[in-house]
Structures are given as structure tokens and as C-alpha cells.
Length: 636
Image (cartoon, rainbow, N blue to C red; front, side):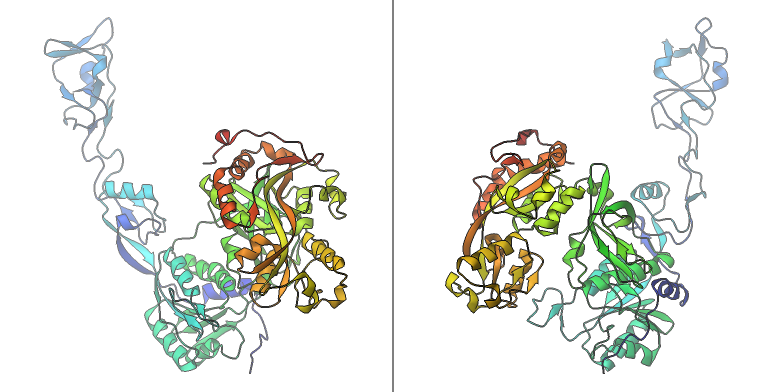
């Protein structure tokens, strides 16, 4: 029988139960100072000796008794009989309490003359100036930095105690194959526990990944017993959903206590918490994004509460580039790409599909939508937690529009110049709205002809108030992508997948049908609409349809057959003032570069005769000058 979530624990309740239902392990280990970076000190650290242990000269000169120099002046110089020559870092003999710089003395035969009195301890580093033996160096709970390690070594600290915990990680699922094995159809690489181990190890935990356990209740119970006996925390990956082969909840209840199963969190609803031998057992959902959320929002805070190194967390206030919906009653965590446009930070929400790991790979932050909120309108300001160095946000370019594989190579060469390109698929209509809102640096658009800007009914109303420029990336062919050969005379003999109304691909398809006197009602799948041409190509590759309209580049990248129908200009559309941004100047110089053109030519899917050409909305022939590539600004 399929189990149902009869009740869901609130996010804050689940976190409170996790932190308060178990004893803190208080486990420590002794590590060499050279391997202590990032670890948390388990007990106070004291200096083993004074630094310096004796008084040292801070300048090249002569060591003297300061009282012997009293009264010295230009009119009444003092000749010193008792002194010692010293260089910087030399020991100052104990009978002396000052050093006079050699340039402030006059040598008279074998003696020195001074014309200014020396202060006691002038230019002397007294014993214990830095630290005295037995004084506190680092308090308990301090996270060790690289500069701390230098000081610890100076003060004689070779080893020190740091906090740690033992974590046992159990992957479950008969469909799993280990890292390094290519999965067969129906199989999947076991990656969630690899991610968990790397993440928790970085906090100072000692993680042990057990072998993959098949979907068998007895085997899962055995693995749970072993892990709970040997570790302070147990994490079980998969088996926490409500399917017919999810045995983890039953196994926990059979040998321990199931505190809850199901949390009002998205992604991550199937998360469970159990107790075995007094140890916490966290059940991760099998879907990657859900597993990430549970690790970040539950496992990491628990280890921080136990005294391990906290993960670095930066936040920034951003405006949403597009509306962001959420289910009332659920705390939702959404991947976001953040970039600065002018003086404003903008956030572009990524796909929230629980199996789409690339959403987090392609984002540089995430936001938390509380359970009491149903979502936010575009331009709403909210907090985004960064998953990258904050300095990288200043080097990030946000593109919103029609996404083509050519942008991946542009992103590769831009990365070499210190730029990070984040793309969001919005189609031409979404691209124009982003430009009007000024929530993207540029909008990639596929335009059948330049006159299309003046004639197309869904773009024209928006462009009249915007001073836009168009940077040509390439000329590309649009046509029919298919898994098997198709001719224009057999359009009604196959199953199609279609693009949304008013998109260039949809307009092209409708024109193609009209030219062959075929009504849409005769086309199987005509009403099966998807958001982007990339989704069209992916659906055909997956066997969900026979054919659809997309670019040759997309067809080639998905190993599909291609029948050309029309040519389009693939352009980066941006506000004119963007040409003053040094990041955009660098980007355009890269588009014009021989390296980028050579890559496009090698694919065989693009024509580069107009690549790099910049035009304005008012004329097809106006060229807008920017500094040459040699003068472009490299972002460091």
C-alpha cells in the first residue's frame, strides 16, 4: 500500500526537534596545526612560551642604558662608554634598556656620541611583547583561519584539539550504481551521499559512506543498526518518500523511534527524523534538489549547533526579475542567479524541478519563501543567500531570453576573462519584458529578419519607448528537428511538439502549415506546447514526440535530424547604456574574437558573417562603435 503524508511538521518545528531531541556528542580530535584550517577549537589554546622570550633590537644601532643619555642635546652631546652594537633582531643584553639608531649617533674613536636622550625601551622589543607564556591565544569555539595558524606555530603550538563528529551515511535503492559506473536505463548514479560526505567533511565531520543497500527492509535495518552504533549522526539517502518500496521509515520505527516523516518544505517534503540508540537519523529524499535542501537546512544547522565549523553565508538584497509563486503553508527554497545592473541587484529564479541538479549548478544563490507567503511579484525586494564569493556577483552577467547552445561557448571564453554568464530561458516575449524592467544585462533573441522588430505585433508595443541596440551573435537556421527523416509533404503524418503562441518558432510553424494548406487541427500534438525550443529538442530526443521547430544548433546538440526552413539572426538585445559597462565591452570584444568565430564555424550550425555587428533600433545599417578588443577591460 502506498503511504500518505497524513500530517507535515512545520519547518521551524522540525529544526527545533532536531536540535533538542539529542545529546551533543562533544567529540574532539587532536590535529596538527598545519591541518587545522577551518576547524573549531575544542578547548582554549595557550602560548607555550613568551614571544619574544628575550628583549630584541627593533633597529640597527647601539644598545644603551637610557639613564646614561639623560641631558644629551646638540649643545651638550653625551659620549657613551658603555654600549653594545646590535642589528635588528639581535638580543639586547640585559643591562641595557634602549636602542639608538646608528644614524642618530656619531662615532668618536672607539666610543659613540649622542645628541638626544633615549627613552626607556626605545626601539626595543621587550620579552613577551607579542605574548607571554601561558596567555590565551585562541578561545574555545574559535574557527581557525590561515593567519591564526602562523601565530599558533610561532607560539609553539604543534597540535590542538578541535571539534568533530562521526557521521554514517547510508545510500539505499536497488536502482543505484556507484560513482564511476555509467548507469543503464532505469539506473542512476548514487550521488546524494557523495554530496553529503563532501559537505559535512568540510565542516570538520568524519563521514563514512556505507555500501549501497538494496530495497530490502532487513538489509536497511541491519545498516541502520551498524551506523547508529558507530556514529553520532546517521544520514539515510532515499527511501524516505511515500512509495511502495520506501522502507526507511518502517525500519527506523522497528529498531528505534520515528519522530516525524514529512516536513512542510519544498523541495524536501519527504524528509524524516528518527532516533536509534539515542542518535539522530535523518532521512534524505532521493531527488537531488530535495536532498540538497535537507542537508543545507537541517544537517548543517545541527552540526553547527554541535560546535562544528559553520558554513560561510553571505546575503544580498535583490529585486526579483520575474514573479515567483509558492504554495501557501510550505517553506520553499528556490535557486536564484544574482547580478548587478547599474546600482541595483536583480535575482532570476531558476527551475525548481527536484531532479534538475543543474538549477543549483547554474545559480549563485538561493532564497527562502516563508510558509506564510504565496509568492512575490516581479520587482519585489527579498534576501538571497549567496553560494559563491560575493565578489563574483560583480562579475556576473544576467541574460534572459531565447537560449541557444552557442551561449555555452560564449560563457566558456567569458569565464577566462573573469566574467560569469547566467542565462534564463524566457523566450522573446519574456526577453522584452526583462529589458523593459531593466532586470537583465542583455536579452538573447531569435529574429527572422531585422524588419521583424517593426512588424511583429507582440514586440512592437514595447520597443517604442526603449533605446535598444542589437549585438549579432550568429546567423542560424530554424527548421524541423526530428528523430527520423521528415519531408514538408508529410507534416501531418507525425506527432509534433509545439512552442507557445507568438514565439518565433510557433509563427514559423504556422507559416509552414499555411504554405502547405494544412490546418492545425490535422496536426497531432499541435496543442502540446512547451516553454522553449530547448525543451522541444529535449522532448524529441526523449521520444515524447517525432518532430518540432527549433534551431540547427539545438538539433545538432541533441543529435537530431534537421530540415532547414528559414534563417534567423541570433542577437543580444540590450539597452544602449549597457555599452558603457566595462563587462559588456569585454563581452562584445569576445563575440568579435577569432576564437569565438572559429568555434561557431566548427559546429557547422551557424553562419558568422555578421557576428559581432552592432545595430540600433532605428536602422539596419547604423554601426555603433565600441573600443577595440585590445582596449577591452578584463575583470579581475
